[in-house]
Structure formats: C-alpha cells, structure tokens
Image 1 (cartoon, rainbow, N blue to C red):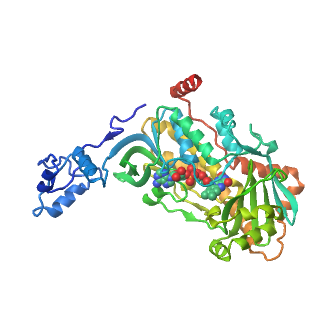
Image 2 (image 1 turned 60 degrees about the horizontal axis):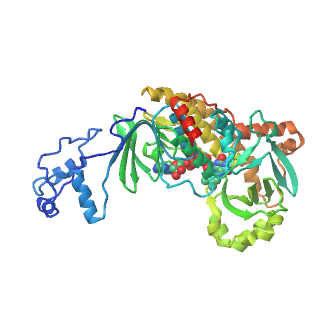
Image 3 (image 1 turned 180 degrees about the vertical axis):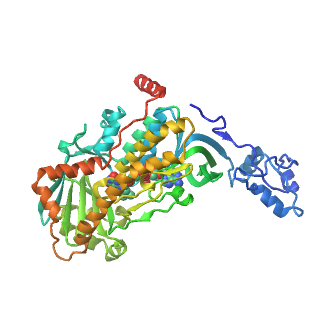
Length: 499
Ligand SMILES: Cc1cc2nc3c(=O)[nH]c(=O)nc-3n(C[C@H](O)[C@H](O)[C@H](O)COP(=O)(O)OP(=O)(O)OC[C@H]3O[C@@H](n4cnc5c(N)ncnc54)[C@H](O)[C@@H]3O)c2cc1C
C-alpha cells in the first residue's frame, strides 16, 4: 500500500488568536512568531491571517499550538479541535451499495481507498432489499456468491400483476443465462455489512463510519478531496480522485456545482410492513385498481408493502386519517383486511418521494458521481441498487489502473460516463414510459383500469416474459469484473482460511 505518511496524523499547527492575558491565565505557551504558512492550498490567506489583519493594532495576536488548543477545548468541554489529515488515492463518499462495491473492487486490486459513511451502521429504514441476478453474477465473479447466499434470503422466480382479481404474469427469471435464476430478497443492511466486511479484509481499504463529508476541497480548479465532520472533530481527506456515492441527495454533487435534471415522476410511495400468515400466497405481487396500486414483496414472515399514491398526495392521505387509509387498502387487497389494524400509527408508514433524475455531466476534474448521486431511479423494477452496483463495477474496471499509477485524467471519467449513460438513459426511458402508460392512468382512474395491452401479451406469450425478466434482472449493459485480484487478495483469502 502506498499510503501517504501523513495519514492519520493530527495536524499540529492549528493557529488561534487570543489575548496574551487570556493565554497566560490558562497557562498556555505563547508562540510570538507569526505562523510560517499564511496562505492555504488554494492561495487564499489562512483564516487566522484574515482575522489577524482585521484585528491588527487593537488586539495582540499570538498563535497557540494544537496541543494548547486541545487543553483549552478539554478545559472548556465545549469544542474538540482535532483535525485529522488523511490522504488516499481514492476517497469514496457514501457506503451504500455503490460506494462499498467500488471500495471493495479497488482495494482488491491493491488501490488505496477511503470510504466515508455518515451513519454509525447500516441498520436504517427499508431502502430496497432486492439483489438482482446481475449483482449476483458480480458476486460470483468475485468468488463471494456462495458465502453471500448463506445469509438469510428469499428467492423470487417470477413476477405477476393483478387487475380485477386476475393474474397477469409478466416476468420469468427461471431461464436467465446467469448462475442465479432468481432475484434474492435480503435486507440491505445484511448485504452492506457483507461488502464492508469483505472490504476490510484488504489492507488498502479504510471505512470511516460516522464521518460525514460536508465540503469538497479544491486545488487549482480541481477537486482534491473532501472535508468531513466526525464526533471527534473535523477530518480532511486528500485524494487523487473523489467519488460521490452519497445517494440521491448528494451533498458532494451539490458542493461541486453539478445539478441533476429532474425527469419527473407521477407517484410517491408509502412503505410499510404487514404480517405474513401461513395461508398467504408465497410470492410477491402487484395489485392495480382505480386510484390505487399495491406492490407486496414476500419476505420470510412479513409483506414489505409499497402503496403507490399520486405525487404530492401524502399530506391529504394523512389528513383523511388512518381508518380511511386502512379501508382503501382493504378494498384493494381484501385478503389483508384481517391484519390492517396492525397499522396503528403513521410512524409505521414511511413516505418515499419518488425521484427520477440524472446528471448530464457526471464529473469534474478530480471528481466523479455514480449510483444514485448521478441518477436517481424510479422504484419500478427495483433496479436502483443494481444500477448502482453496475456503475461501481464499470468505474473500478476503468479507473483502477490510472488510480494505481496516479494518472487519472478527465478522459477516464468521460469514458466511464459514456459507458454508463446508455444503460441509465435506457432504463429511465423505460421507467418513464411505464409511469405514463401504466402508473399515471391507474392512479388517476375513477373506474376499474384497463389492462395494458403489453401486459396482456406478456401473460399470453412466455417468451415475452423471459425478455422482460432479462431487462429487469440484467439491465441494458451488464458489467463484469475486470479488475485484478492483487497479492492482497491472496493474503485476504489465506486470512479468512485461517480464521
Ligand atoms: C424507500 C426506498 C425503497 C427502495 N426500494 C428499492 C428496491 O426495492 N430495489 C432497488 O433496487 N432499489 C430501491 N431503492 C433505491 C436504492 O436504495 C438506491 O437506488 C440505491 O441504494 C443506490 O445506491 P447508492 O449507493 O448509489 O446510494 P445510497 O444507497 O443512497 O447510499 C448513499 C450512502 O451515502 C451515505 N451518505 C450520504 N451523504 C453522505 C455524506 N455527506 N457523507 C458520508 N456519507 C454520506 C448515506 O448514509 C448512504 O449510506 C429504494 C430506495 C428507497 C429510499
């Protein structure tokens, strides 16, 4: 690993202005020399210099060493000023599916990476539990599939829609040309923990939890890393390349001045769980009726339900009250009527504001956006996680070598965008088509909606169901792992063999 020697060192020259009297009262050493460095990396005067010049003449300026500051902070118990300077080849912001997969692949190829995650763990609200065959194929290429599938999961072999009580099967995964001919349903936190643990087995992988990136560092017009905050104080990460994998509300994207184009979506979703009984059907389904759509995903002992509502109508639904909401559900899915009183509080029902958007340009010098940070997907088809993983695989394939040789150029970032723009745009077009032709007509209908002709055809012709399954399961341009396994891989395998 070519880690920078300054990694993990505490910056030991944090200047502060303070009066001589105040300093001597607290017993601090006073350094009368002006700080040697008066400008920062971007050529601007250091904050202390700017404050000093403002106060010059009326307030004596002295600098304190960081050890003094720590004592001062400890004495007051108010602020903790421990600035850590880290440096790496690639700083990945966000440990979602995209960030962790990219970190794992780069570290496996021997590239030094730091992944920042603002949360303390991965145990968060439901954010999509589907792992599609394209991702399972990637796990197989990494030799991790059997281990992953030891974790509790369910297998989804087919998908169906119901109109007026009649079943219309539309996807059949059992004939896919992949090792896994099913969608694996697994809590996202189990999948993320799995990726994080595998990543940690490589010496060049560092995952910093509870570390929230708040700003990008710029140097000579190039993004040169990020500033982050932690419970212990600020951290600055210098990096040859920063990759924003911080999701659909990406702060890094915003700070870098990149703005996503909103493509519009006609619906929002209310997510909640309902108990599953032994007499329930075993497989997931989607039920359509005038003004209402429910997608119920079959889990081990519960149904993960996605109730589709017209965009922006959640406040009105809440105002109408829970009894009205339960009645509306009971009319759509009478077989769930016996357990709807489990929904006692709006706290159990989470709103997902559906966003379909995309960046026109995914990069700036020194910065790349991928996953939801580059394109938020509609939940239709449950493809968000898998697209994010595919972006990560493509990014690792294209960037591992330039990162290794410290030669990442805008051309590499352009190549990556070009490769991933086609599947992103094609998937979003398909989703927008379904929004306009299926979701919007059903949500705005006042009488039983008509079955879309395409759905009728798919339910009649099994070959069409296989085509649809391929689109959902593999997407438009499935990626394959081309990154090498460095010597670190051998060590990691040996380690896991010994444990
Ligand atoms: C309610 C819901 C249901 C969904 N259902 C499905 C589904 O069924 N199937 C599917 O495929 N997709 C689903 N999705 C979409 C899916 O979750 C995303 O497409 C996918 O997770 C994108 O992965 P990502 O790694 O790009 O971003 P994210 O998964 O959003 O990960 C971003 C990570 O960055 C972290 N982060 C954010 N800001 C910072 C910061 N400043 N500093 C450090 N860390 C930061 C976040 O904590 C998070 O861990 C759903 C999403 C939601 C919200």
